[in-house]
Image 1: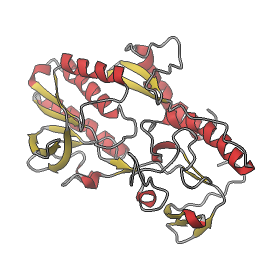
Image 2: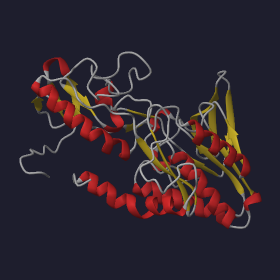
Image 3: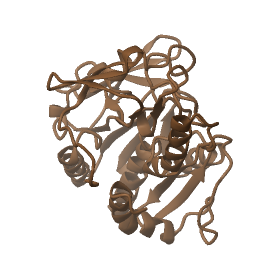
Image 4: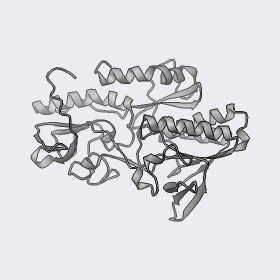
Length: 337
């Protein structure tokens, strides 16, 4: 913790931006002159009927989001499913913005690699359920994934939103675009929960009041990262309402923008920095290969490394993901990168 910082070990329970106050879980009330909201997002497993994080690792239900233990239990389930020699696996996406939007694809591709390595790939059915007609926001990557799924025998189901799970029956229920429902049996399912800003944000006046992020995400200008109605408030990271950006790489790109613009706001100067929406996803496409996908709000590629082609799978991108990202994350957390 940097010197001079007062670390209060309590969470934010409520915000009163009209009176510049934050209410804490320990009962304290803080007054602020300027506020940076960096709360991350909230996993809403409860919006899937019958789903509970305690079920992860049982009845074929996996989900890597809930905790390290949940990710480990999910891995063990996949190993058990492969050991059985056959079965049906369902891979889902949330109907909301997601942290690391390509994580559901990574889960599918890495599992496909393991199924292929088993030598019994034809004994397994793999289905991918998407709430819309796209699996990724960047058009080129979206088209690549759709073609790869077709080549690897993945059955894609557009406009299917996971709404309920019956653990004992091992059946998942999906809502279709026309309001009808579909009942899908599974031997393994990877659940991606709906996500939103934490309830403390959603239930206060800092939440978006209109537009695509209404009622769900912090209301900021996506370029300056300043709140659209409370100029003394800035947002950074997963909590903000933005069309893309929920990655650690986005936070690293946003931090200098928030810093410069906050200092300017304090001094009564025009805000000097603009965030271009930069986000990065080392998208694993199989064990030992990945694509380093970097792009911005305009959806054009923004490559950081000239020797890595964002449209090509490579061992270099895999190594970056597998070996280099964890120390890089810690460096960011410690303010060294």
